[in-house]
Amino acid sequence: MATKTSRKHSLADAALIPLDWTEERSGLVGYTKWFLFRKVPHDISWAQTLGAASLTAFIVQATTGVFLAMYYKPDPSNAYSSIQNITEELTLGWLVRGMHKWGASVFIILMFLHMARVFLFGAYKYPRELNWILGALILVSGMAEGFTGYLLPWDNTAYWATVVGININATGPFVGPFLAQFLQGGLMIGPDTLPKFYALHMLVLPGAIMALIGLHLYLVVRLGVTSPPWSKTAAGRERGPEAGAREGLIREPATEGDSA
Amino acid sequence: MGAGQLPAGGVRGGFLVDTGRARAVESRTGARDGENPRVNDEHDTHDLPGPSLWPIGFAIGVACVLIGLVISIPVLIVGAVVALVFGFLWVRDLFVSRPVTAAAAGLPDVAPVATEADLGDNVDRATFLSLATIGVSGLIGAGVTLPALGFGVLPSFMGEGVDTFDVDLGPISNFPEGQYVIATYLESPEQGEVSRRTAFIRNNGRTDDGVPSFTTIFSRCAHLGCPVQPNGPIDEEAKKDVNGVELRPVLAASFGCPCHGGLYDSEGNRMAGPPVRSLDRYEFSIKDGNLVLGRLFSVGTVQGVGASAKIMKYYKAYPGVHVDGIERWLYPIPTPGSTS
Image 1 (cartoon, rainbow over the protein chains, first blue to last red):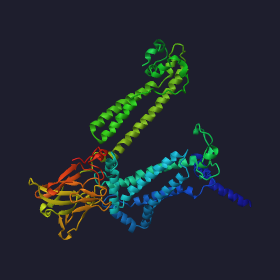
Image 2 (cartoon, chains in turn orange, brown):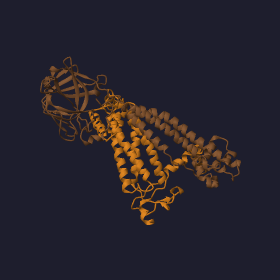
Image 3 (tube, each protein chain N blue to C red):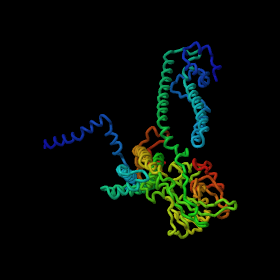
Image 4 (spheres, rainbow over the protein chains, first blue to last red):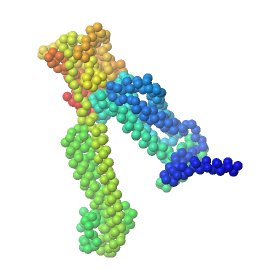
């Protein structure tokens, strides 16, 4: 019995000592706990997992995209054949490309479902308006990812769909023609268009989305998860002094009527 | 502005030694507080600079720079000068009106207490240093960011990459009079397949003045740029390859777009569907008996047929962009490379 206890202790030490060491020097363990171990309303459901699902879909896109970028050649004479090489020749290339291609739609669909949940639950209301705006920016960036990524296979569908997409941009009043000229680097799609779309697709837009997701998650942790509109309990938390003149808990939609 | 309201003797006889403080005495804030000299002993009172027109001028200058980048270099230079001058005035204004403690301390009934003055001085120095740090960091950041951003964006707005190449379609004898020929060619062999274009060419014989006349229609739809197809049988048997240019005669009385159903008549005028103008055309010339296609231009409408047609010619506009009618005011600035 005694030996079992001491072994347990030494096992716990083996796990805890590196954690304590890290925590003492960085505070990262505390931040991780702050991020992950949060209080949530007791009556949340699967509906509140759509945001995490969208995040997972984005991580899938980022991961598969990194490895596709190792084999894709973004110039007009090699792009199509390099995609064929990925799909037909390379081991598991068909799978990773398929995950990226179909995962793109999954990402967009999940973002829309997540947005519908937030809208229908009233989770965009005070104090979460800013997070709605950030989410809308993520959605727009995600759709820009879809637009720029669609050209990369460089087949006829990709080419003509992008011709139409760019020319839709060109019909915008005042700035439209300049936007189109920027996107294709000339009056029509040319040799510079594909690398430009590639750079936007794998550097600019993912960077923007990652930064926006970081802010989005920070606000989720700071403001907490909303309980559903039919909730009977006040799943709020005390307002800090930063809330200014407003009093009471940071309220959830269900308690708006009760406390008024 | 308010220097005259201050008892000058007290100020000069006090502990004001450097020019920074001397300016402070003459500041608006100092003048306003002259009646109640102790009010600014509270160091946490926030003194905002007075209203100023400089930021507005600065903003106008920046706007001129941005517009100038698109339109013309002189506008850019004027804008840069305006922005610099007003920016300088603005910054000077901010620094001049900031310090306040010395103004109060300089009055006759206030004993010149050195510690208080030093404290005020220190706060100012700290503020100055942090502002300077932020300013210098901003300048360094701008020095890195602006060129990169300019390189990323500006080439598209300076008419780079919009070069069009003249294309030789071969002897005009290959174009039977009164019949359309589908000409498919590479505009630039160096750029490869991405520059493949299709034109619909019809030999109209000669105009009344005896000048050779060709109808030279560009295949891209005036709606959103899809490839328009001639509605009629293509004579594949008579297909010719002239120096890489593929020529296929076609019996076409109209053109249709497969994407969204745009329909054009034999002159390229819109008959039905979403297009906002007629099909674009090429300028053309005849060199050594060969038909040479030049730059593209956009067409409002075509009146008449063939050699006697009257063509409303405009600069090359993007598909979907109006070139005539009231809607053209939505697109006031032609994109670089489109004017001819």
